[in-house]
Image (tube, rainbow, N blue to C red; front, side):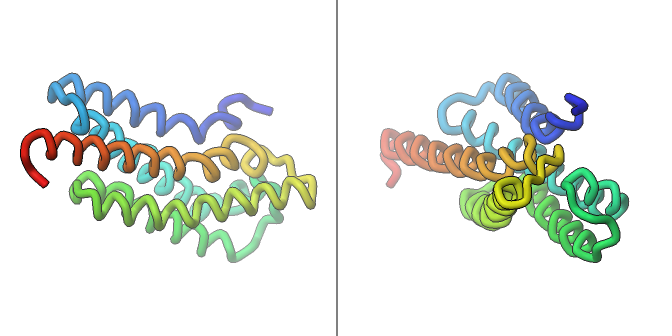
Length: 172
């Protein structure tokens, strides 16, 4: 198995973290603002660009993507999954422009339901059909299952720290 193919799903979240660190350093963010910067860049780059990339793959090279998942080529499901992934990617990228907890929450819930469901599908294919294709049983499966939980935890931490800071400042 090619190591690059196996680990590509980790690339954009890692880039998002590095961009967030630069943002935090440049803007001298601390506390909940630093957590918010990490969350925002994870949503924009890790989730948004990640889903955009996946969507383009399903639409532009459907047979190759199907093969990498261990599915037969030629299925029209690729267009539907591709359009859905593009939609989720656009929503993630919009987090750069709509920087509020409500939009972040909706983005994480919507993409999280799809992503975790897809991860469960990968587990099913692995357990019941022995599908060990790189994009079924590899890093994609783990990212589908755990990345939404990571984003939700970041959101909860951000909200909690923001509320604590506001309470200290006398806001409710």
